[in-house]
Length: 267
Image 1: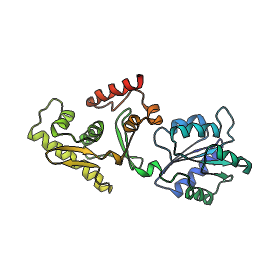
Image 2: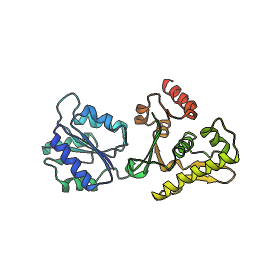
Image 3: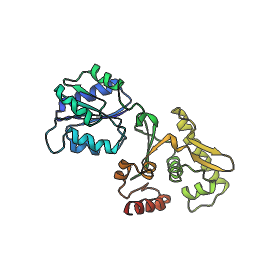
Image 4: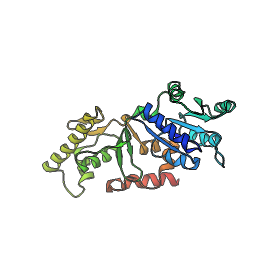
């Protein structure tokens, strides 16, 4: 799961991060003492749970921050951290999952994790995460995923740019080697990179992401991938906020999509 802890006391943040890493060692857990930094920290990965202190002094307290985060992640689980039981009523204003009383204990956090309001958390639905905005990168369980060949990553980017649709060998060769014809040699290279992607996914026990139909083409099951580009096309507020005019910057084949996205943003 992906969590964010915000409390003006660094001791509380560090304690929460220690507890969360012990309870969920494979998760991605971030924390800050500044609400103004919290929105930036949430841009890299879809949030599942936000642990928020509502008594933070300043222009943006926990309630204000919680409302902003809910706009970005409508199914976000919010757990309020407070030193006073009477503040628990504010949990209802945020449609929160619950609240934790300070000093926070591991048992209390574990209980809150077991009674979350939204169980179908984003980070558990899809383990493969792709970032197209800026430079293209692919992650597995929030760690960068590397293939044996850099061209394999470029091939995967090309398939994602085509929204998972089956692409012919000629189309893919045109993406990877725009100055070379579709010959037996380039087709052999293409098969090598397809195999590299399949083998890499197989080692991670990820199956059926690549769709390969003989004599028709190669595509992706995009339902298995969390991609900022796809979420942007669906009108996701976070993805729209993330797009700054840059898309797969290292690949020339992405120029047409980059132009289309920029046009959509300016309309």
